[in-house]
Length: 283
Image (cartoon, rainbow, N blue to C red):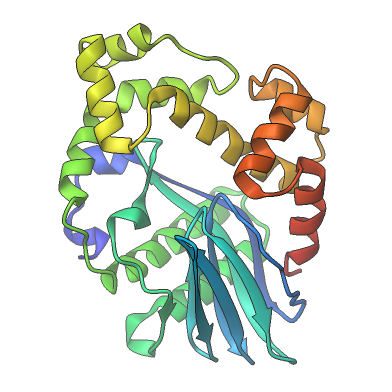
């Protein structure tokens, strides 16, 4: 179901997006090796072909995108990209979220490769990357164009992605948890008490813990750690902050503890991750 068919004021307030990187009609393609990113990877192939190997529950799965097709790699998926000689593509690192916590695409069966002009996904990707390439997001008109292009892309992807059965249940529960999720998002450098989070949701401590775990599959502490590490991934690639500054700014007790947790999630140290991911970005 397309987003426009299910819009409501509550969803409008809860929906947000973030684009960490984009490239328009770029021929700077790199074999990435294995990597994990905190956002969806979107590649619209203009010429040539892109190939992706994903590691899912210990098994490898491979998909390819030809000219006119769009390859989508889920946030947090361990994957490796290769390409054919002469490949040109539009690329995005993008994340759409609801109530601070839920990856919008996680409620839909998003195809790994979307083909066919009728879907409009290829055109929406091309328009979005072209709009971002103009670098006029500091003007009101430029910002409006970026917002419109981003949500057009979202609408086109959802239009070809069947809803998962638990979508509405998760949306309802997340709305109830909104206050706690907003507090965690605002204070990634702190560890709010469970009682404070429960109070934000007008729930008892026990009921809050049960609802949080049932909805997000994690305890509040585990969720906070995950959000910190995902934010760290973005900062390592898209900022020049030192590893010590990132660790301190995200509430880790010291750089050693941060590096240990980061390597457990990604398989690489923060410095290696920064170097490897920056090398693989299209320009």
